[in-house]
Image (cartoon, rainbow, N blue to C red; front, side):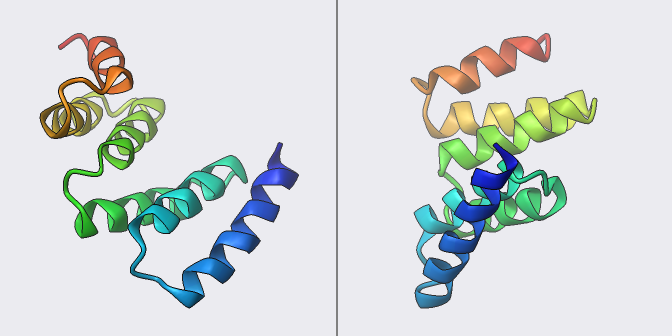
Length: 102
């Protein structure tokens, strides 16, 4: 799976060089970085997506998931709440919010 993630990172980095303002490409690059095992770069890229589009619910949820994995429950809860505010019907954020005992 990490090999696939690294291959995806390479492809998405090329796409990102063509248009680094495309939010969806940046989100997919962050996902690929996480899959490849580079959590630090992935989190930074998810943060860039959030800055570009404060309502990009999947990126908000992903930031929460990363915080939850590190045991940062309050930070995770805040990210999940932001995701929920952006889209109250986004099921993953609802489920993850419950995992933070909110």
